[in-house]
Length: 357
Image (cartoon, rainbow, N blue to C red; front, side, top):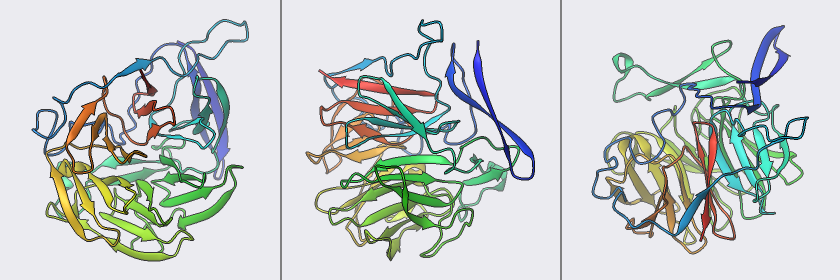
């Protein structure tokens, strides 16, 4: 096993080393963040639940090897890419795939065929990780998640979500940095939501945010999930509009609002992962319905033809399973391409590409 090592000096001489992106062989790593959430198996309503989609027909997709192997300096293939916990993936406006992982070079860009294009983002993410609150310290009123900073943490472990909005802007969420970035296609930061390194509630701060979605009019919906239990709505120019949700198990409440998506009519779909369900709201946060027993999905996304992927299960917008992919779910960020191919990131350190047949 050969690993390329990358070291840098950070903060008063502290020496931080991160694993780079090539690994010959298989490396299993667990940084503690989201390790129990890779599909429909967590929360109330796992794989055997009536609405889990486990018995849905398998759709006509093929799991293919992706991306293309890098080459060594001697010219031979160097083995699979080693993504350090793939937290999220997204399809860019040019058709390329953005892979967000928790290691050096946190944002990696590839052509659909698998050719590497570029990497960037080391300066954006915090060196901290989300951890589970032990059962002995847990109460119904508090979050089941906290964060650890400093030497016990890891390089870029704040990386949590990447999304591309309809205008082509790239959004990145640093969960443990409590901040959301908006970047243009030149990769310049043009907006920030939250204050880096400052946890809190209200209109100006987040507490371990998890995801972002975009309304048909450009409004922004941020899932403030690990530390808080709310969805925060902003205008397209970043003005706070409202928030909804609180911790609990009832209608409109959340155990962990992990992923969020919005349909063409402005309805908001929230994956309440720890309660094993999807909740549906109107654009102003009014609770409309819940899809109980779906399982604890980490990744959801609405398609252009107004269906919704919940992990590897495709549903109509009433929650009825239509079909499923021939594989397992992932942590976050389902990339849906114009050709219909699907990419799902895995915390095991890979990206699953499902080619539409």
